Amino acid sequence: CLTKIHGKQFYRIGNNKYVKAVNVVIEVKDVTKSFKIYTDKGKMLKEKILFRNRNRYEMRNVLKGISFEVKRGESIGLIGNNGCGKSTTLKLLSKIIYPNSGSIQIAGRVSSLIELGAGFHPDMSGRENIFINAAIFGLSRKETEKRLDSIIEFSELEEFIDNPVRTYSSGMYMRLAFSVAISVDADILLIDEILAVGDTNFQAKCFNKLREIKASGVTIIMVSHDSNMIERFCDRAIWLNDGRIVEQGKTTQVVDAYMSHMGEVRLEELQKEERRQQEAIESEKETDEDVTTAEEETLQETNQTENSDTDVKDETESMDFSANRFGLKYIQITKAAIINEKGNETTVLKNGEDITIQIFYKINKKLEEYIFGIGFYDLEGKCLMGNNTSIDRVPVKLTENEGCIKCHVKNLPLLEGRYGLNVAIVDGAGTPMDFYRQYCEFTVLSSDKSTGI
Image 1 (cartoon, helix red, strand yellow):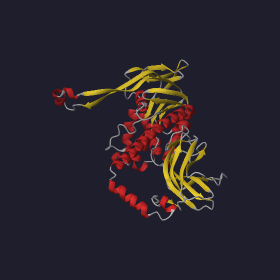
Image 2 (cartoon, rainbow, N blue to C red; image 1 turned 120 degrees about the vertical axis):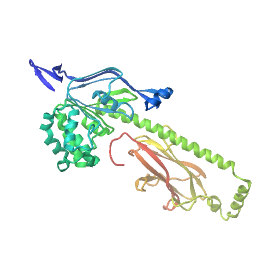
Image 3 (cartoon, rainbow, N blue to C red; image 1 turned 135 degrees about the vertical axis):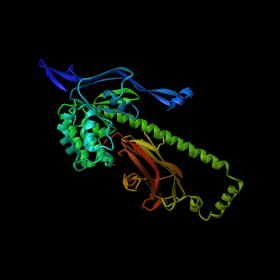
Image 4 (cartoon, rainbow, N blue to C red; image 1 turned 90 degrees about the vertical axis):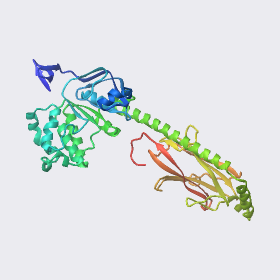
């Protein structure tokens, strides 16, 4: 705790042990941490003696030389993908584990909201466990007794406080543990993804309490995957990736860089999956073609001869019009494709990029005018946007029997999500010729934090 000696401020770190109070309260220098991951470890003494070769392991480097400083009263957010070393960093700061190399200097009492309820005994009452848990945080019995009423009041467990903890629900358990942790007069508070405590009202109460703690000058280091909460609550952010610090600085700047990176990673993964699916479809088509028999070819020729009553019927009888597709078939859509701004056909797009939707057609019977249309839909069938050549006042007079109409969409205005594409061709009077609902589904990735569609 902070105290004054001869007019200067010091932190007491033990019995008659003090360190000078400085502006930087946490200093991490070139810290590394690795763990042994055993593939086949003997658990009993007999196994370890008889099967020595079973104790094989690999060293996994979780932190690879990170360095940063935290000033008194700052709120720092640690962000990054799973396994990047965020929680390990907090455990090092709380001295649950120790680094393999490097140094960590901390000035002040540390309270950790990492493993809530560590040390709780299920057969003891909530009141008894408050004293046990508070002792873990370094509080004496007298200090705990002074805070006891406020801890119980904050947890809202007055009528259950003398019941065994094993009778508590998971929410009650976490509420009691959280109430103890925030009642410690800490100089530094470490928080690891534990703010979803209790019901909605209690969560709001926790956030308000944390804001009070922050306003009182307590230094806070927080780990969370909720980028919006990090931006609202933290002064600075540190982005970890694969055990190294990628970027640290102003929260909005670091979070935007991280979200952009994660969007690119996800885009690459979706594109790989798209390519695998396309290869599987092409392979299946090749297999189907190889097993086509001479009898099937003969039967197909016979059916074509029998169905040759009119020109339109010749061209359109074999079209597969399901419940999602209907029309008079005077003109048919042979294919539609979404092209990204790099010129590649894809079903994975980025918010704000320029795209082109291509509609390939084949004419079976000439019309005076054709209207081509597209529509973006959610997967429940709700229309988000629809447009066609008539609305845009682009008259379409086709002279060739086959071709392609391109619709350019600038600055794709869809937020992240999964959508459906409708394509259609109608005549000048609006009569459907080939109307294709949910022709394909596509994914939009976005770093835009707006809500809606």
